[in-house]
Length: 235
Image 1 (tube, rainbow, N blue to C red):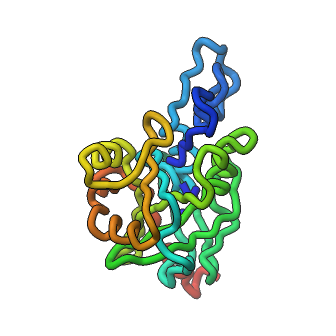
Image 2 (tube, rainbow, N blue to C red):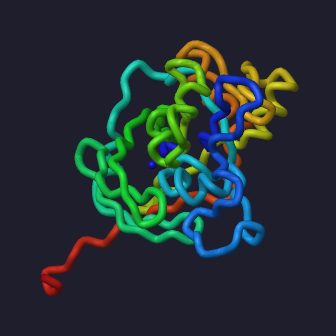
């Protein structure tokens, strides 16, 4: 849960969006002639990559820092899960440290991922640094890392209920609207990508008071269903 959408802007002005493939390219299909290839938007690319890695359903919203000093492993995460996101179905194994070696990445590839984070009230969050987003979407060079302030992170909201986990990223447009209205404190990293600013305590308060502003939980989510234990008869 890459993560996750971190469609991060680059540091230099007017550089191409690193979340978009090179002109004429379509991921996973190199057989079509250039004019027929459908361009991938930032959100679509990340649904195919980071979204699968729990870092890309709704938009690109960065947080200035993690809201807690230490990340922890949610004891409800370890185990085997069936993941579904944007037409992708995979089985993921999460160990006792909330680490997985087989999280789906681009295409049929997998990547190692730490699904550590923190809990605030009923909500749980996974913290994803830009370096993880960089690996997950295969962006060239270090454009994603340079595009955000040092120490910034992405936060994936998830909830677990009766063996089913659903996860969301913040909605960038909702965040921008809330910043314009003075509800959230932050600035634009680029035209469409907000950075929510504040101390760790400020950000915890923001999440506690304005989670519903940042995360539209009525939208499509990444879904993980806990796998049923293998029966003795199946061995």
